[in-house]
Image (cartoon, rainbow, N blue to C red):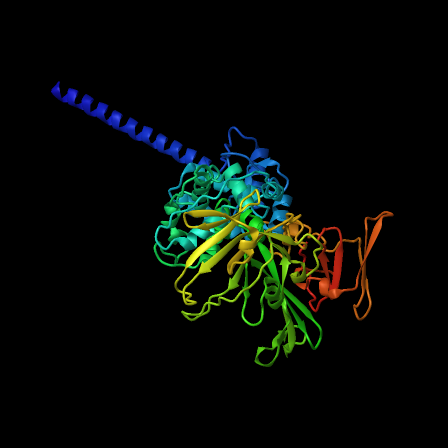
Length: 583
């Protein structure tokens, strides 16, 4: 009898253990399925028709994977879909046609970077708000304008009396940073953005953010009539510039550059970081709208007259003041003067395929809305500061220094000046002060915590180290003339998991484009028609105005570039023969 009881107890224990194991197995299966369903759509053969399974299979063959967590707008047409790129699993598409179109136009260059970002985000312990927001921004804005230019125009034209300058305490050799913070505090579009729109509520950084801190700095400056300490920024100098240190004497121009670069990085972090954003899209951030411009380096071969134009981004201009120059205009003349390349400095001409003598000229190709100019007063020696007098105007016309005439739109008004006060012409020792103009037009002299009103004549008599000018009228557009859509189309490879044979390759040359030119290509006529009675004709005679670095090769040796207004095309000869669309 006792044995039977023991057997019953053992059977009951075995039943409990078996039930627990089975339940644990079902629970684990459900957990794994729920986790996987966040990334894949499971087709149930019992509850789904064969057509549904066939559709899912075709989706995978076309290079898609199905995300079951939420629908996202198609990156091309905006239609809601659960299909995403099978490689990066971030960008959404509603069809194979949309995927291939986006792959050719921009996604190919960024797909691998987005894949790495997705893996990095999944491995890091970040907040849900940070991860979801970052992914959404990449989906919607990658390869597009990051900060709408019409919103920037509103910030630039902000009509507000602003606030009076507030002094800043010197926290130990911090005058170099104080003057830069004061100048930024009266850069209208930046102030309007931080005080009106506010960066803090949009910021997705988990660590210290310069724009968030500078917003707090502006809020305090606008509400305080007494000097305060900017220690919250000064204590983070290594975050702004790697070689900057709190308590050491630094250069204000260097700090200005670091501050602008840091703000640009903050803007890009909202869209996945610099590596995740197309280089052209990087030029459409708020900071680029404010400070960004372009320089053009033009080289003309003296043997074949071939013109080579190279463009580079600029956040400021640094001009030499050595020699006989006595004014800012003369400094800019010297900056843009033609330079002869000869002797050991000869130019390698692509057309001649040899080193030849050439002419080189720097010019401003795309002027910034806020122009920062640094006068190169400091030399390499410890006692190498140039204290010569260099006059500068209240209003500066940048048109003579442009690569092409811009009319009366390139007028700039002075709003801030940084001065370095030294002893015995020493570049390693001195003190920084600044002069700023508030939004009402009144000038002030700021020496750390001391603020005093001054006249314009007092400002113009200073030995300036840095000059900040604002355009009288905002730039009418942000995209470059040859990039009307910010798109970049070149000879492409196939997109992931898409068969080339299944897709017809579109013609890259419009059928309604006729090009007529003489043998010497001195004049080229292009006719564009819409197939009906309407047609337009463009004649190009001055080939020097055509940017060879931003052209579309159409036939043999003709290059096509879009005009500033985006409604005309210019044609120029080119030695290249491959088809390269940049439309």
